[in-house]
Length: 399
Image (cartoon, rainbow, N blue to C red; front, side, top):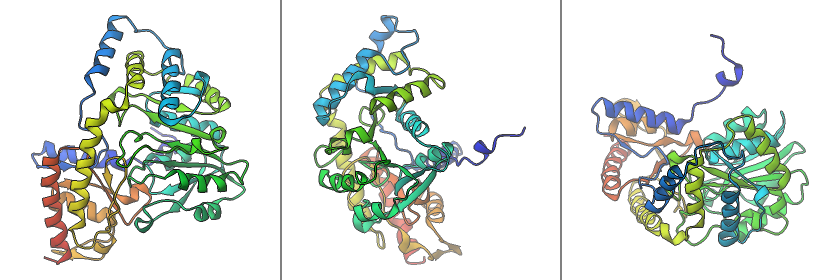
């Protein structure tokens, strides 16, 4: 069968690929600890599950409006006002089958072939592939652990060309856990506002998993709401990865375009998930504090453990549930004839030597790093750290 160039040129998600490899080794009886996939280990809160059961009993089993039920979109509007002090109307909200679809909807509606999309690295694994599917050109702007993996206004200005159409980033960031403060977003916004054709997609899916207060949105900066699409959803903060619901808040022309686009792909997301999502949106975020505080304890455990390993450069994530150490000090080292040339080699070494799966930083545009997810129990993380420390130290000492 002759497949399209589009699919042949599409890269496989390396986070999903590593998770698949881990499952295969587990099936062979190998005791693998997987720190490769970004999925909370908590179950969905009971009050949300009860709402879904009620929706089934109330026969919400028919097609919903493409952009989502009207009362769900109103609940999202209220959430944005309550939590973010942002005023939207329901016709500016589009509900999709996961935040991933919300992002690709927006990209497909904004980008023409040849348009440049500015993406600070590290970035979420699918951003580049999405831009390429739309015919756009990803322009990667590297950042470093020394600067907390944040983009500076000077870097942004330097990267902008007449072909620049879009800036795409996440805060809290997957994979670095970095969060842009309001003042930092304001400084970036000053650059953006000097370029009339530049639009922003702000991926805020980890908004509820933070360790130093609320997350600011660039849409809240004066003059930016009409130039920004906010992406959010239920997967991370509500532990609802399998329920598949994301949403976008955007200027009306883009929301209408995404409604049109989605109507030709998936139509509306699950009616039952949408009814449960109303309960989630209406809930006091404090009802989820037990998850957030557990992630913070795990963050502290993992970061403190990584800081004891020689050669690693570690930032302290302020959100999400990932550690993203710079491991470049290990490049060129060898053990038992096995030479580590890059982060890909190191991730495979850790999988084979420590039986711990991580993801190479190459997947996120930062080849000097690896990503570890701490979305699992402290007991499992403690064992994983012991294994990782032994494997890193063996390599460091050439044992």
